[in-house]
Every structure is written in structure tokens, then in C-alpha cells.
Image (cartoon, rainbow, N blue to C red; front, side):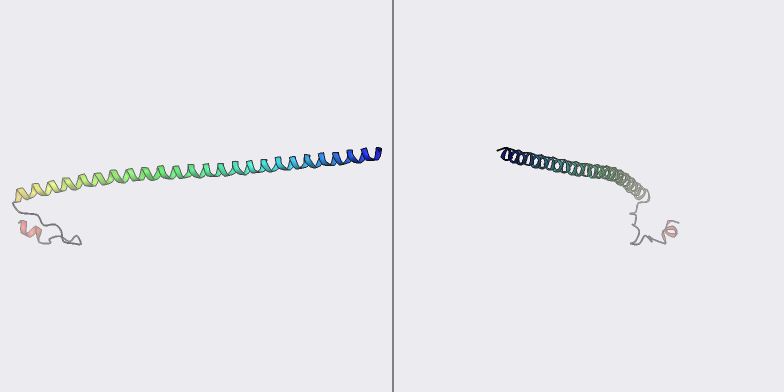
Length: 112
């Protein structure tokens, strides 16, 4: 009977040790999973922040280009107004330069 009690105690001790090892393995796996999840979150957060910085930089560049476009439109309108004023003074329509930017080469001799 003592042998039976000792065997039962050994079996119970072994079962308890196995359960403790299994519990520890589960805790270790949960900790590893949490660490992997935390790292993935940190990586995604970092990538998001980088993309936000790039977006903000591009937005600034876009705003600069919009401002430049508006400035050029204003300059174009001022030049159109100047052409209109000069046409009224000279009484003739100004010819736009030919394609390629050469313009009318005889313009100076015609003005004289």
C-alpha cells in the first residue's frame, strides 16, 4: 500500500510538473506574441509618421506651386492689359510671336 501511495504521489508530482511546464510555455508564447505585436505596432506607427511627414512636405510643395501659378496668372493678365493698352495707343493689333518664339523680325523697321 505504501508503494501504491508513493507511485500515486510520483504520478501526481509528474502531472503537476507537466502542467506547470505547459503553463510556463503558454505564458512564454503569449509574451512572445505580445512582443511581436508591439514591434509590429511600433513599425507601423513609424511608417505612418514617415508617410505623414512626406505628405506634409508634398502639401507644402503643392501650395508653393499653386502660389507660383497664381503669380504667373497675375503676370499674364498684366501683360495682356499692357498689350491692350499698347494696341489702343498704336491703333493696331499686336501680333503674337510665331511658334518657336522668333516673333516678327521687322518690328523695329515698321515702327520707324
